[in-house]
Image 1 (cartoon, one colour):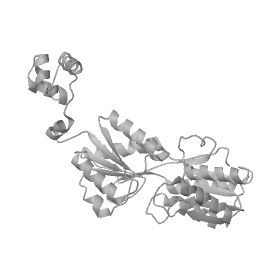
Image 2 (cartoon, helix red, strand yellow; image 1 turned 180 degrees about the horizontal axis):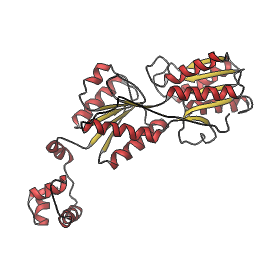
Image 3 (tube, one colour; image 1 turned 120 degrees about the vertical axis):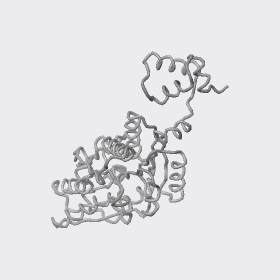
Image 4 (cartoon, helix red, strand yellow; image 1 turned 90 degrees about the vertical axis):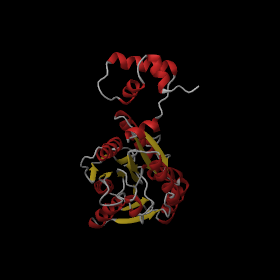
Length: 324
């Protein structure tokens, strides 16, 4: 049997309006009355109709998050911090996994709008700028810039690329490889590549660039990419990988080939993810927790109608460990 707000009111001995005010925290209400209503809710296992409440308030206290691949440690960890920070501020999270599929992303946006979310954090980007502008909801993008009029949160990718490349140069590497995902995609992460190119050219260091042909995170393809790198350039003695997952694949391949790390090959990753095997990896750590919190804070500013900065770029940190 479904317990209604009327049943709850009868149990406490007050009006339906009074119970509604307690549930929505409206007006002055005594602590003893609030306690009685909450106790009755627990005793009767009352479940508020969140959708009906959101429609009456014109606010759902829910936000949507669309990420490209929740199985990727970076997105898994940032999602954890987004959910935690949102919850502390009274919001629930609806999580969508686009897998960089345009049709799927479009359907998830429609679902989030139909679910009356108050705003959306976009960590995926497959559609046109016009399509995002037509969402007509508070919107923040994460680690990507869709439009100059949509606020975004990212780490300092260019600075990170400079730090990683100069670390390898300072370690006397003579031929350095940069490996990454698809560089044709319009992502802020491409700035890591741009910084790499500027540094190796300015110091006259021999270099190689390898990229996947994929718009996604397919770890088997990472293996093939790294194998081809060492097959074609066996004299590589330094590698800057645009993600820790790629860097770990480099480490595995060096072990398979019998190349000692860091004596023969030095490796730097990017992200600073917390995952087994990454403890000894030199990397450029993104402030993942802070990025997640700032994405939510920026979205809540929009929801409240406050002025929102269009660009939030957070500092990165070079962490040197055993692979360099």
